[in-house]
Length: 397
Ligand SMILES: *Cc1c(COP(=O)(O)O)cnc(C)c1O
Image (tube, rainbow, N blue to C red):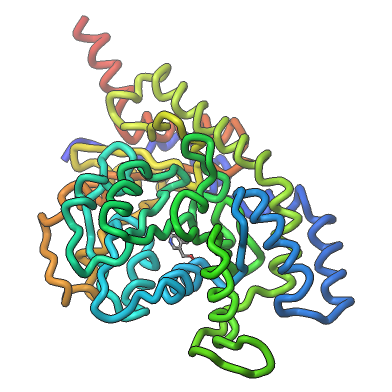
């Protein structure tokens, strides 16, 4: 293992958090507290007018015909699967390199996740691997727009059309992301979003929303989120209790108005990392995320790749310098203990397994001060031994 040390030079500096939600809240505190008081004044806490308004505004934002609020991104995925009638005996093809809920939602409805490997550049589903994984039992493809960049949808939609499959977009990290000028959530049959507080659009607790252009699916998901009640305690099927709170909706409506500014700030931070990696000789030591053609990447996360078995040591060195960094994700889902019954073994999905060993996410949040970003880069230079290598080269010359 290569020598990896902390820079030691930043011991007195304030810690750099991986994400700073307090900093963001300070910029909108008055707007938020005003709507919180408005909701309290009505004492109407579940669904209602605020949720209906958020649904309309989200539908407009994503260019979808309908948006349906629900209790979380996980529930959004479960409601989508239920509305499509997917259950026992059915297979859904998805990525093993994602948050757990992508696959657990499939298991929750009694269906079987079938994992296809990822593309090493985008970290999103490899369309050829998806095509090869289709069987007579396949009912849907669930691409994930990981880290805020839309998956390669054209070939995925072609496969779906050829075999008559539904496409459920796990857009939980990708509200506002675009592909060929169209927003995430309207590229497939149903789009699922999360308002978990750390997402690029986060609430004051759990929340989620579902987009679709299909009025029948929308109607069914609206019913499924309230116990399958078609009105007047008439239950036509068994659904969930998965309603969105009015407080969440009111807060999210405020934040949605700021989302494009926050996205621009994230994109700017990403561009600065990219530029400094090149200028400061880091490009040979790590791989920066690539923005693919015809995309609007919203950088829910900024995920680099560090090869050569050094990732964990770099993470430890940054931690010693009190620089926030994180690993999304350390274990591919096909190797999770709870999915051992599916029969996957190490080596089955090599690109996903390699990504788990190599990825390192850096602070990218909208309010990240430029000085802090410089310290992140200095910490990386030190951890990766860039300065020592340069000194050695100079001495040798
Ligand atoms: C966050 C997330 C989810 C789940 O959303 P929750 O609101 O936490 O339930 C699902 N899929 C992906 C890719 C996510 O990032």
